Image (cartoon, rainbow, N blue to C red; front, side):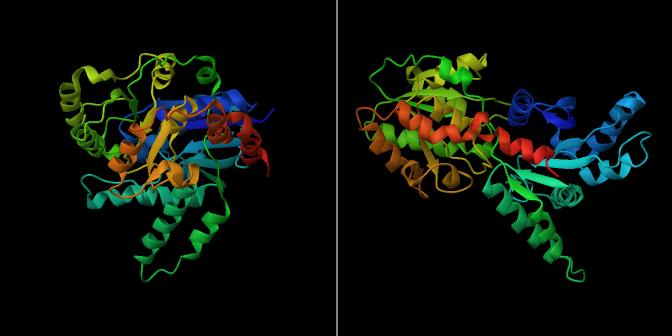
Length: 363
């Protein structure tokens, strides 16, 4: 059986969700080294030497792997350089990196000059990797465009062909999703009033201000709705969430992080419409989970969404209120079981496992 070393310095959220699914669905002998999902900048700068220490703590005979799988919070160029000095390390082990995101396309609230070091780390990681997986075409195309722009700034160094090398070893790999739990939980929806769902992180890059502003405009139009406000919040939570809870009052059926995945799915199955107003989205697991639960998706016509869902589910710039207004006037907008399967089955691990197996182990 192939031996795989997984190095994940941001083991939480979509990164953890992906790796847990990978290990459950792709047969291999896994060794997993992780750090908690916080302080991402520090992880990118220092996780590589930390992982070297963890590898050196292994008995010498256990330091041989066929594949090393990293996320983009590992500086693979530094990791690879330091591995040369590790006693017993097999230099033939192939380095694979999975890009959940890229720093070229990640919106910065307060851009600083020194943040460019993180785009450089992404670039050097891609150069040092044997294979690269991207979780969406948008992620891949924005990364390559960012690399080309980055290299153009080096006017006296003509190395643009390196981007072509990166592109040749890159593969589109949608992160697999295990829908077993979702399919087992029965829908508990028994309300006539439509339920609108938010199930994203409570952070500014998900643009919650636009979401709540649209709801206020719908309320002014006399539209009736309930709300389920799901998602993880942090110390710097946008103030609009608390304001919305106070304003909408009893219309809010749930507010905050779900205590368990089962509760999360049960709440999604009470919804009719799921909305995204994201300024940044490289894939969209939360939306796909909501769609699998029967929610009609309302998504911006940008980022990764147009490659995941057709135009029926997309709204153009400034078109969110109009889209929601039309849906709220329908008797039933929830997706049928047939529509749910057609929209989501291609993202299941059962549909994607062979492609991942080939990416990991084919030469």
